Length: 248
Image (tube, rainbow, N blue to C red; front, side, top):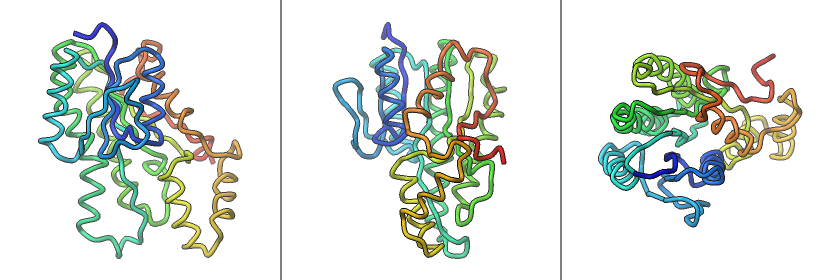
């Protein structure tokens, strides 16, 4: 069994997931980075496993590999997600199924297969990455928002279900973070509003009380805190990290 604490980070190839995996590695954790692409994963400081979290066979195989190699799983960060920005009537059934399968299904499958290991060790923390989209209405974000709202509700329910085993479950709702996903989002918004990308980006910055968007490391720091002993009395809640956006 690994003497170090073991963390799994899904969607670890880039953005928030990548920053989170790096931070845990810096802090001495054994990090297992999961994603469908290798992206920016630094294999010198973490273990990379190619895994589509929306496929149960892949999740089972991956979790078994981790349990056998490390003997335990201390922290699970469910970060993998896909964005869909479209008017409701243009969304196809397949697109709907894909977003729900990855954003909500992936979290369900990871927890379903990791929870028994945490229960056995009577210890664990699960951090689910939701979004401000689960709190506020955004044009053309209906299904994405629905999955993020569902993650927050799932977190509450599982916090009570897993508390007897000393497992904490929390979610975090980042606001606008400087990632490829956000840039894609701004691009669609710029087209919808007939603005240049730069103008749409400037507006996005102005929407934040702090006048800027976050960098992925700022979100990673909160995830790391929530997984730590310093957050030992936090469970079943959602932490907004949104630069004041929802305070309006």
